[in-house]
Length: 64
Image (cartoon, rainbow, N blue to C red; front, side, top):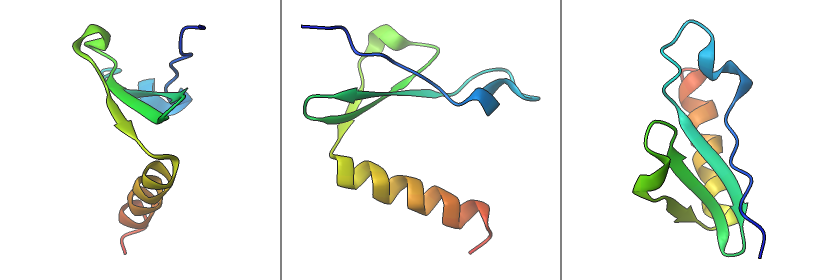
């Protein structure tokens, strides 16, 4: 079994402390974890749940 490939946004270090979340495709859905504490575990969201979460973030960013 391959290790998950965790990644974060390229924008995560622009003018910030670099604190962000990382995401990875997992067999059961999408994993989300804290970049500062990767060993602390992760949340597992369904692919649909992750898509819904991203849509909500985009709405909030647009001021809706």
